[in-house]
Image (cartoon, rainbow over all chains, first blue to last red):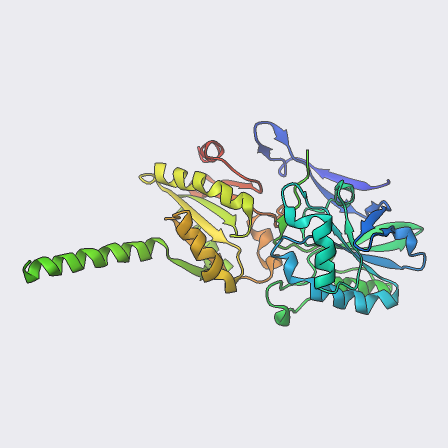
Length: 203
Length: 160
């Protein structure tokens, strides 16, 4: 995987728990690897299964997180609108299922049925895809775009600017990014922040 | 029992209830006001903990913060808890937690729907993951942001 990483050291380095150094990385034109994950219908899904896709909305989410619970209806809407334009939505759960029993594959299948997900809900049991995307929390959303045969991250962060009160949303960050990409424009807001539940990576 | 005794008793009981009500007081706060509060006294060490009632690792570290506050109650130290709970859950989720853990320090519920408007002002390396803690001491220009769980000993170390 080819990536440009600027490791910003001094100033951002924090000494936590003794001498552990944490490097914060800023991604620039980051490419992501394809993956193969099990969907709630039992099939396996890869990016390469969608040869006509211009891009994808990838949302790291899960069952248990109160912030993630606010969004299923909005994810359905996004997929309804953008799948037919060549940008399907894939939801991925990468939570540590040992820590959160609510996030097991069986519970994912139930959730997808109960909330009538119109998009694949993929189980990242090994957490490799979340690591590849450097996803930190749920929900953590990405817009990736096909460029010269590579999948490139064009936007990452929040889905929109108001989790708790959907009727008060002013900026649909995902939709804004995609609309700019569809018009061959640069994404103005490449990264946003939001509160979420940490994806704990198993050691 | 004479009337005076009854009056004193009623007064004592009302004091007791007042005290309980006061110690479990929560209010919402806008970010700008919070910023003013945590910089209002330059000599005070402010320990600002961002948490939510739905965040398991956050709840786990709260007793350590309370112990730290108790041990430093005669120092110029203030522990402030900032809840990122949804406003509509203030009374059904947050208040019961405050009562259960006996949080006797200031608790604010941050009333800001869009994290983008304020997260970077706390620290621009913060992704929004909680728990996270900001330690401030204006007069010595000390500022430390820790986007990870803390323990009592780490708190002591970071506030030295």
